[in-house]
Length: 515
Image (cartoon, rainbow, N blue to C red):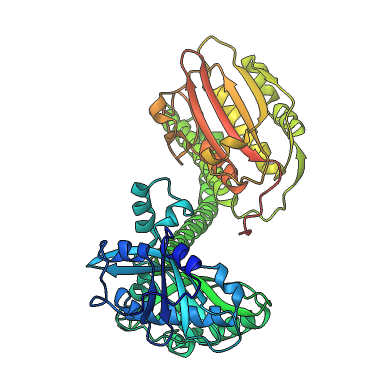
């Protein structure tokens, strides 16, 4: 091994004393032709005599990295622009492996074929450029991305040589001693059903230089089918010619499997809900006819034989007629519940102030009889179903009147405001939409906090029918209306004051089909 091949003594002295490790190697066999003092200190533990030690730079690199270094030298020989870039290698010396960045350039800057290349080796400078704040956290960063689910690659286009990180070997389940990869070799792993897609994508990207973003299946060396997501971009030389394709690959098999299982579960749930709604609609509709007959004959019995019946007979008839009426109410509410999501009436731009006025008119008699006072602030215009918004307000206001405190006139306050943007995530709402929060507060009997969610369940009641009559479906209908409008509703008990029902509605219906 020669001590120096730099003719200029002054320049030779500068290179020898450089703080960076510098070597000159032969491109064909990677034999070391020159080394500086820093290289000796960094890789030979300060020993000055290395003539009997490693004489080839290949002894620091595994087979794959040797081929990668040769490809790098060939690249910089043909394109001086490529000398501005570095590549990361793992150098092993005395059983210690360190990460280093290597810059390469031909020793002589002339058009003749070059065999001698100078390498500038910088160790551990990555901490200055990669997103970790210390050498301690650097290991956490590498652990996150250097795993069996993630890898990176480089494809030297002209030489048709592909180099992988360890993660790529794990994804493809390939022996890490194999390093001779080319495009045809890699393409054989692509699932047969996806090969035409990949070929079209890569050929098109190669022609026009666009980045690649594609998901496809592979069949690994161990015959396992995996789904991978690849992002790649071209690196061009100073003349704009595509020299290299670099990219990352992530194994998304488990993620896609979980997503498919979730989609299947949603489909099953939707089908079950649809079947349930169909059943509720058909059952309720079919029950109307026998119920009508029961009511009709009960009325006739009451008209013709009321005077004949005595004692328990009158009581039994009255109970039968009351039960028939309760059943009619229950069936009508159940039918209404099942119709909400089946409604084909298009949404329109409506004024909630007008909706509230209609509800107050419909409940006018009940409001007068109970002395109810309704105070309302200005309500917004929104895109919604007129009939369902009317039913929403009517159910909640009717609820407030029904559950009033004994001896007290119901007082209902309605307030409206725009939901702050930072609250959208709390309710899992579309961040691109404007939402209104409408609060309806009463001075009624309230409820225990533990029942805040339960009261929206169908047929759930917190009080007996004798004390507070009803079907137990009203608030369930409210919740279903809000779901149909891509909003939400919740209830709060206000100690010693009453209850507050809050519903949140979008100003315009969000685009649920967007990405």
